[in-house]
Image (cartoon, rainbow, N blue to C red; front, top):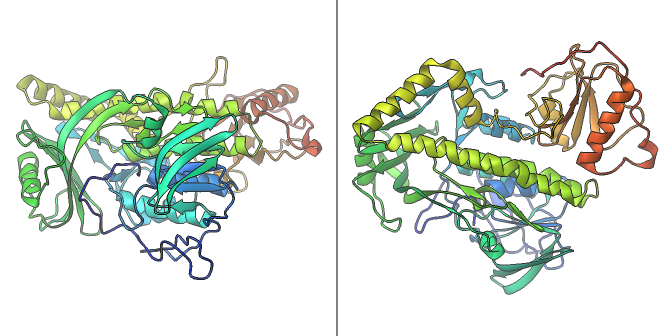
Length: 557
């Protein structure tokens, strides 16, 4: 099951189709060939019965699982991705927007520009009650909100994962799992029967009804936030004033987002039509709720997809249990308000992937993996609160409630610091991780896409999947150290930064004394990598030269 659970009877004809999904006529192995817009058939290595055991099992081929599997495979690990859906059944694609921080992560994988080219960038994000947020001031290469369907994100991530050598196994349902000190064994039912698959680690990215979470016996506390939402992809006879239109009244709320190709995504809720998820929705119901909330149905016609669903607010208490991890909707689920669901799951994957790779390649201790829960669980809790606040404001229908919603909108529109903070958090740009006591103020912060001395961008350099050490021009690190890439500031900054593979600052130092800076760097590398470089590179970076002392906060690109 994917990152968002599939509803009975829903289809999405825009997703890619797979040909010859079972076997290659020459080798008898699973080909995994895919076709679709922009995709050439790719036949990844492995996948047959005699393939080596995977290092990591990823369960769930939604966006979170696809990004994680691709990251691990590009790091040289053997990865098997198990998906309960048959390869002929499309994934439910509720997500509509990609935020700036997610685009930065995709940029660090060479995928962002292609996604942006096929999407619809928004330079203003209107919320309920007339509140408008301005993403154009974001300190990012992507100062906008990108409207694009989830299946386009999945298409790029799947193509990357296949090219990296991920083994895909569709129609494969995990029935249970056992773990010990050496690994995890999953019992999997597929068309050939029930068999066991073993790996060093397993990650459940299998959605809100996660079988991995259930197998671990973990609770999923929370509640239903909003019932009987209808969702449709339609064509419109009349174009709305904005490519992203949203409004709420005392009776209904609705959102219309343009894909930029003549198709529109509609999400609506009618206070007087609270049906069970199993009750089919039709185009007349979508038209009605849109007229109630927006005053017009814009002549919608030719629906290619209609579904009904409900939205929960839930979070698992532990993202790690031994050698098993949860990410995406398997770990947290919340209302669609703000479009943060898919984005948060992709950030989970970006955080976990490099850590698993470091441990499995012997570059870091197993304890590094504990930082995944420590860093991502608070983010998931924050997203639950913010998305919940947005949807509760939208649903207020009493006169005092509507007045409160209007007041919040006025404050956001008039107080620039408040609206800027809201946009930073919604986009993910403002998300940071807790730093240990006494750490530099930049530790745990997102590293912007810095322009470096050799003309390259930091986020492009992160495509190599390694730490990046940035020092003032002229400073050296002594002997080579394969734990990081070394580069220099473009300008006269004196701060040294160690940037993690996921683009967050692991360590920063303003010391003017070479010995002090060298010692601090050694400590940081020991903490994050848990070891020393190869024998020929064990000398301390004592070659760091002194310079004028100045605290320097990295600026945006």
